[in-house]
Length: 178
Image 1 (cartoon, rainbow, N blue to C red):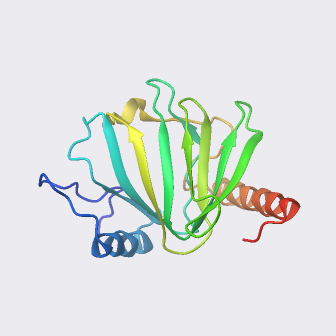
Image 2: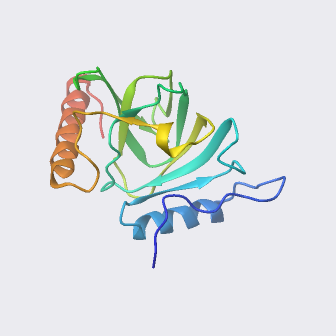
């Protein structure tokens, strides 16, 4: 079976966001080698506003990146599960760590363009509703952090564990529970 980073976009004028749609994305993310998948709601990559489910498993590594040229704002709302959300200084130092969860005090974030960021799913079957400026052009959509390892490398596994440890320390220091 060949896996895709995104499922098919809708073709109808009205696209109903259903539990079945959510469950389908989750099932696909479990089987995907990347342990995540996007279910787009926007009809075409050329649209100026992208809306999607991002179904992510805890083993998925999303390399820190930013959207600067062209600048793209993003927002995330956790629908299921929880994540550790990170922003970074340009040199790779962690700027902010935020725990987000469907049932927590903090359940989403909105980020201005140009900030390095990533997140890690803390629970199986985590689903985020994500909104981002479009259009999507693969060559210019993301600028990956030069200090972060590439996806699929052994270094990425180590780096992701370092991020998890940083989140655990921050949560412990603030008295939060995972």
